[in-house]
Length: 269
Image (cartoon, rainbow, N blue to C red; front, side, top):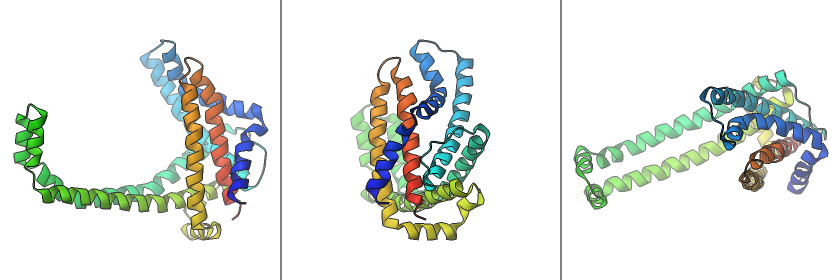
């Protein structure tokens, strides 16, 4: 499928069954109960805690349900799946674990690079002399003067450290993000936790789809999702009913659309 076919199909998919679209939306409403009560001026600490727990559990459920939508897309099945509460919840936990495992590596490496490159400049910038000057500073000009005494080499070193760390972070998160998305697709397709970590097979899948196509796909998907998200946010500004309509129709549409699109992309494997 080309991009036109994928996104055209994905945008139409949520409208194939309005009843199921609204059912997904109704489940989403369970995640915003605290917001709804606050809009009506109702606040209770205990109730907010209960709603927070409900929101957490329902969001895990929705992550798992997204996998079933993804699976239908891979299989080119036009039916919007029903909720399978237990299976969806378990799949949601798997989704979180897989995401954590894939993102922990670039996060740790980026942190280490940032500390290794930025520690020296930061120690110089926030030396005892600078901190003493800041402690005694009462005006913004005194704060500026305190930092102006810092050697230019330290500022240059800090900027260089930030630039390199940012570049490393972008490269790592893009690479691991692609592996994560394909791993999630394999998790959805085979229903096996281990399939999400078959790195050799995942690399073969990436090559088969095409790295450029994957990157362009997620750029377009991000743009479309941002537009939909902006519309949802605008609707949510409507007093009282906005957040309900936004969740009932908007967030449910976004879940079905985005997972359908990714499933169609992976259907080529």
